[in-house]
Length: 454
Image (tube, rainbow, N blue to C red; front, top):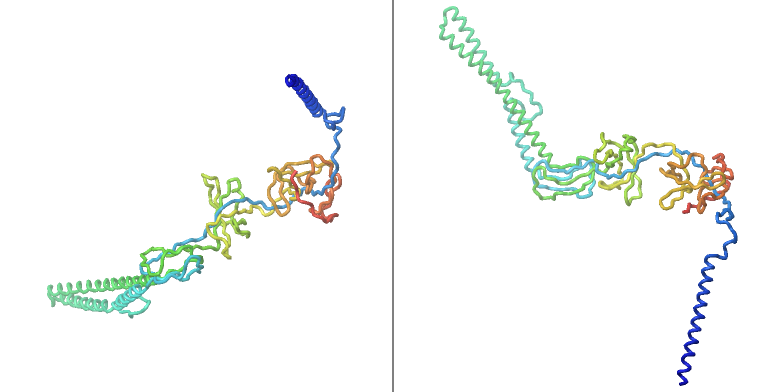
């Protein structure tokens, strides 16, 4: 009975305690909401237009005027290097390859022996042709060996013999004719001598024709000797130009038929740079212009000159094919290599420039700060060529504008006072005035800092 009477009083006490806790939590939550809506730092009765915000402090900066400088104008292209000459050396006569004196990478000079075909067969052919030539010379009454093949047909023995027979027949005919007129000789005798004369005359003509035929045979034998001599010379394969062996295609001991390849030779000095120039830049490309190129993985810079231009723009790509000769005496460049090249269209061309320390690049945008009416004015620009420490500004700046160097965390509209620039050696008046004499020395020898992002 006692336990039952105590339980209701205990439940009532717990309910009272929970109620107090809930009321306290509600009070604290309401106070937090009021504190968020009315922050203690907010000035009472203050205006929301920011007119009473503290002014930005003035900052001393170094500046330099934008200048008009002569800069070269170039167009950047991508191309490939190729050998200016490339040839696959093949055999002109069939035979067994006796020797091969080169391999891949071997450097050869023009006229240097590359390979040798066995020459015994061709030496024998030459000797046979020379023997036939000597025989043909003998039939014309010439010495067996000699370079002069001139022959007078009337002085050969065959023609002189036929000529003598002709003269005798002619005299016999003339005497018979005279006797026939006197009635001493009969008509039959006259006809016989007339026939003999015709025979002798035709034999004389035949002798002349025989000599001409022998002269033709002599010329043929002479040509056969030259052919045999050339075939003997063709057993030696020599380099047609200075170059290097790119590929070896045969080995000693192989029997090679006519036109069988032996080695591939490339001329590596100079090399041919072949590039495509867009149509919009093609009008400025000329023969003889300088070309600078770089190779991936090579820190060296190479130069050459434009030597060949296509006469027309390619219909499909609207590109102009340009070829330049690149000296390669050291052999550091290789045919087939891709190259990045700059074609110099103009050596000196006026351009508005600013110092590189004035440029700020952020999120792909490029900008600078100008000094106008004693304040920093942020300006988005488009840049072009670069020459040393100076950058061409294509738009947004004109020559004479005062540009802030190393702006760092400078803000748009912030008051600035300018100092003489250690970069350009020019002096500008404080408060954003125009630049003074560029020949005045800098008051401060320190170099400006690097540009930082906004």
